Image (tube, rainbow, N blue to C red):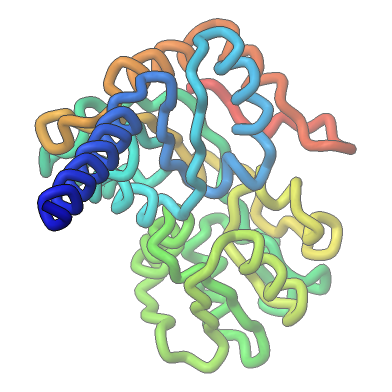
Length: 274
């Protein structure tokens, strides 16, 4: 009899756990957003979050990662929607059937920053590939790479490829597998060159310590896209909330908020509606 009672209690406990899990997964009030660190580190998502939640009633759960890791999190079923900036990986994600549609809605710019005395002579270069080549050829210049499969890292690798240079293993090249903020910190410490997005640079202490040596150019445009995770891969995706997020982010109100966003102490526009 005691054994039967114990079995009943265990079964009830198991059903309770399963019930709570089902409720958590089926809770339509939360949207899980896997996003790049640049929109989080700059304060943009915090700025937009309150307005989105107020207008839609959804709770926005933000997980900031490099784009590659953010996309992998969605591939693993840990997100309802993506907001990232790595076009090639985004298309691959959709091609694998994990994403419904890629909605490109805003952009900012990649820039090259470095020591004010610019020993490699990057300032004045016509292209980023030319700038990277000068850094590689200079005897004392150093370069910091995020090395974390982020959108910024992908752009950096593409520029090295255009320059015909393989920097991995060189004693002047530091690949740190970390986010933009820590990479900028290391660039400051070592007076090194680095590729960054302009918004993160302006929001970081490196602003004014490292100089912008190659500013916003069309070739350095950095597009951001949203992708709803497919329910065919992960049935528990909150598709309704994800659709509402995409709809809100492309609304006139959100566009105006994005265009008007500034970091403290600056009147420079950092994100632009595409």
